[in-house]
Image (tube, rainbow, N blue to C red):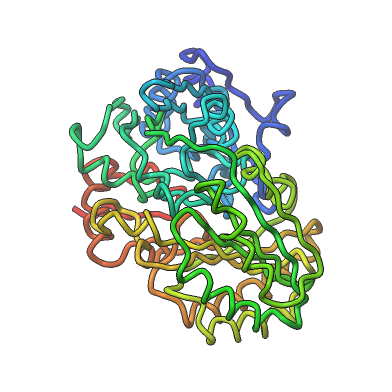
Length: 442
């Protein structure tokens, strides 16, 4: 019945379980999310989205919204419900003179990166180019340029969203400012964002240095990295990955080319690196460095948090935990924050984490279902140990587990209460619940 209601009223494509493309279209990035929706709606217009939302609401159908399909716990798909797939609505339009981008809800980060590249314009975003721009933005969005230009949401000027009543709304700091506040960090709890308008920033080539240090030197090198990073300008961002193969440090410099080599060179003197790679790259190349490591069709788990600094307690836990990792595909990943991220008042957006010095993720990727217990067990244990010495809170985009406490912990009591009241206003029946869910509170 739901298929009939949708099929007769949509410009896009409705795919049920008998359709020849069903198996292809039901797949999402994380292979652990092996689910079978009743129908997949490939929307091609805002009207398609409105109709799908209305049908789901009227018939009490489970509704999953899919942009890039990168949700770690598989929240962009479901069993037996409706998947609203935005991948056909992936256009990105750049106004070079105004330095703005209009990004449709189904666009990937790579689409946005490429659209701005010819004009040397960027939006600070994530670090995997096949991530959906919508999901990343709604959670906050952080990456190599966040210390210089802020979070992705700090560049968001306006958005168009379809709420649970099927209404299409234009929102900004001036138009429905409460809802605009909520979507900047509140995830997909408030509707389907059909387009975003971003402020863009000029950027030339960047210099990237990469060093692999032996695992035996990890603790010493991390202490040295901590000191160097503490005094770094916001044009420099440090990231690292700790695996059984060693400690790989990546440093990105986006400032003056005249200062580039002197800014990154000290990170190669923290120990005895086994390999070194230094070179100028385009922003597009930088954004694709992690694409293969986070490829589709593998099984993934991740859990993240925030640290004020990489203190000795954190180093001790990481080095101790990595020794029992099941393979080099199980890792600690760190990204330096601060700089422009901290310039914005914490109350200005729903996102919480602006006072952190670093964002961390324990993440694992593997290929066989029979290895689930091994990788999940190590990942949850390692993340739990690091969480013990971390700041309160988390980042909703990087949580592989789902429970009612994750959203509350992400926002803190005061913000969560505000979000819950806004949820009651815009989605009182919790239609948009396949997310790190904020329950409506009258």
